[in-house]
Length: 148
Image (tube, rainbow, N blue to C red):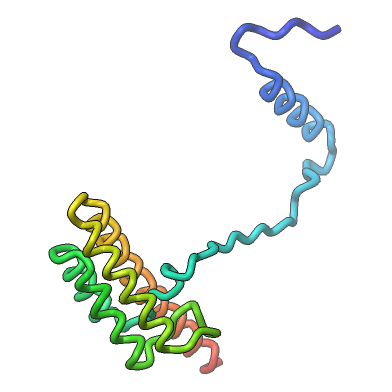
């Protein structure tokens, strides 16, 4: 016989309790979702994917420039693309990626008046530093793999 639900109990909570009871009844204690690996990949737009992978010190300088003069660090990072910095847009030509970075810098400069560009500029600089730090971790893992 089922008892009526209390005021605070929802059907989701009741379903969770029923699932817990069913899992407890399973002698192995395993649920149906064990062994499933889920991978989440971030989808980037063209402007965001055009952020170059720079050396860490250059990325920190660009973050510093973006913090105090919105868009300046992004403008400087555009020239690192011309110097051979890798981006997440491998199928696009180097000049196209350069102009995408220039466009991002102009957007940051023009919208800095209403603070949107300044905030965007700081986040852009933080993304540069994150990409640079991840690049360093990836290259060190590759070197360790080649040594073994």
